[in-house]
Length: 530
Image 1 (cartoon, rainbow, N blue to C red):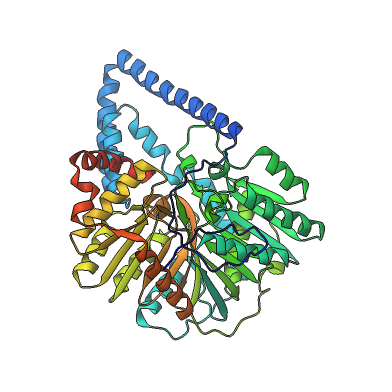
Image 2: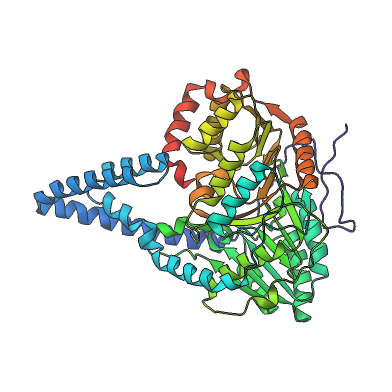
């Protein structure tokens, strides 16, 4: 089969069928906002000064008061015992214990200051209040007939996050970011009431200009347009000029978790959710952000492989609710959600669709646990596509056990990394699974950014990576479904992707190199923060 380059979605013909390339590797740097980089350096400098002051104070106290050293040692030891008793994952526990022992004079102070009950306690109370007020908008629905494995997953989502199991929703799977944004542009052009956008990255470029052209036209027509973006994700990509243009058009825009010069572990928590909601009737979600590399307008790491999902029908109201609760958290303003909900008409579909979210606004690590439930319920196949693979011991063992049980377990990773140090850890973990029968693929000359899991029972498409950041430190969203059209489309996407991949075997393992294993082993110490 002859393979072609993927064209831009921004020309005259917006809809294309080609999604794969045989990709000559082209690297083009993304233009970044220089002022954002300067601000980051200034803030990081101030944080380093604060940390240095903490060290100096400790040394001074240790010099004046010898008993302080003994007290610090005792408190550090007690803190390590406390860490072992927590519900943190084993890798995080190990990292914290190493840090506390290496900096026993003040490490225990930083640990307790990093406890989310302290640094995020006020926010949690705020979220709890918002969720309680929004409960009246949730319409409970009975779980439709489904397989036992799907029913188990659905009940978990209902019991942990109150996520509603929907039918009456039509889904369309996009195997590329370009096709996803073709659909987005078409829907934005016909918006009549409101457009809600929540993304991790919004970047200056061709795609943003095209989107803003449409949003400006809609704003003039009185369409309510709101944008949530992650401050860290956008601080070097979304220029002041673009923000001025957005605000000048009457579009409401809010950053999540601004970077500040106050020493706080809360800076590590980001809004990684991806959703574009139009009139409460249609929503787009998946792995793609609003930036040119996601549609291959720019080639940063070869071909950029992404995936997404379009939902039309009753399930859209779940995403609208996710957005409105986050908007209220950021603005502090209460409003009536009802004009934005129940806008979609149910379509003729009996398939189960469950939109769900994850983050510090929930009591459980829902994204990770859903993945684990799907793995546990798989008896025939289990395919995973992810840019980053940094699991904890539980997830790693589950995958190994499934492969040893005869389940066809396959993992698709990038062939070209976007972050070399993260990729080293990713390959190190993935290659450990080969010995248990897991097939590990790397897509040639490409960066895989899709976040997709497929079993014989269901599919999940969303923003959740297979790594500790997504599992424990980020706000995420995804769609769980047993829709046959989607599962077949995802299966076809995997089949075509396998053809463009290199299978990792004994001869081409990175772990063969002892220096790589040592390097990756050292990096695993900071894996919870990657």
